[in-house]
Image: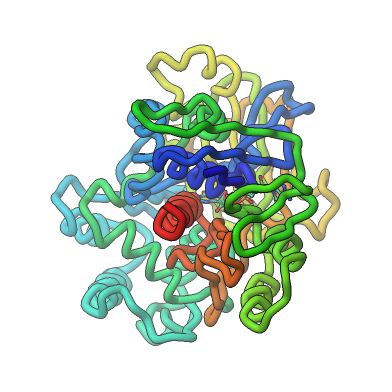
Length: 452
Ligand SMILES: Cc1cc2nc3c(=O)[nH]c(=O)nc-3n(C[C@H](O)[C@H](O)[C@H](O)COP(=O)(O)OP(=O)(O)OC[C@H]3O[C@@H](n4cnc5c(N)ncnc54)[C@H](O)[C@@H]3O)c2cc1C
């Protein structure tokens, strides 16, 4: 059977791999020239090197992504730099490091030894996480993260120092709007599993090279079927019946539409109308999007910060919008990646989630302010090497706003030969890589269940 996959992001490609494993012949259509979607490598004209469209991190708990890489014959242990959970403010005012103890004591020990919160605040933090765990990581429906924290008696200081940066990083949604249940899912993933689940994984190669570029060459042994990938091909027309669908007039037995929600909506609304179809389309139309900006600085020499990832303190009044600082030299150190190291070892990435305030200012002014922020907050590590170039990438539709009460569609649609996949489907996760990979896998399994 011939299955088309529309979209070569992490969800679409994950679906393609699983469909190929199940013996289908798969054709992937990707509108862009590069695979990876919102997590891809790009050539930076300003820096004359390949960078990511935005700094991404994964968690040890992202098991399906790591399994997928292994299925493709790749080694996640080599391609992903792994370090135990450590949240450290660049200026040293806040430090949380997982203790060298088995789970869950690694976290308990980490919180007890935490710098930046007083004893009462640390105690309330432990109590809140313990009670969430007792409630099986479920919060009351409809709660925002801010409401959940207030009910959990977290002080304004603890919220400002710890919870707020964590929430914006995990959900890319302001704490007063963010969904407590989705946040609880992130906490469950990192804190509710084995110790390795809370490890932080940082890609050492660009996000397309990490695994999406390998999909085209994937050929599982002893399995029927083929896998073809067409980049630079935007599918414009989708028509469907009971036994077939057609993409731009070409018939397939089924299709997995794996664009983001607006792109998927544009295609699905061309299919025959029905009441259930309208309800389904309404869910897709309800998503709102929040941008993320990534500022990449090219330094004259690598800075060699002691931590790959440091927390920056925002101060919008001074245009200090930086939230996280990543030093690529830290995760390229001392290994066989020397060629890549030469190109990108002197790059710093500064992440600005919910970048609406950053975007409201003239870019040169905002960039200069963020560089000043890094200089000031990292003073204890010596002076910032000379900045020889920079690139700003703004992803306007980086993630959907993770607000309470979102209705997220299932992979199976009301149209018999049409499935969807994407981080926005009903995965239980916020908009994250692991959610996208699982969504693709689940869509493929359901295609197999129905048609196989
Ligand atoms: C800057 C940034 C930082 C992020 N940080 C993190 C992080 O640290 N950790 C994390 O887990 N997640 C992070 N995310 C989220 C993560 O990138 C997404 O959850 C994930 O990439 C979504 O994958 P997807 O396949 O669902 O969708 P997409 O990546 O949006 O893929 C959809 C693809 O479909 C293609 N397409 C659409 N319409 C058509 C058409 N008609 N024909 C052909 N192709 C079409 C698009 O071109 C696109 O490539 C971040 C996102 C951004 C933007």
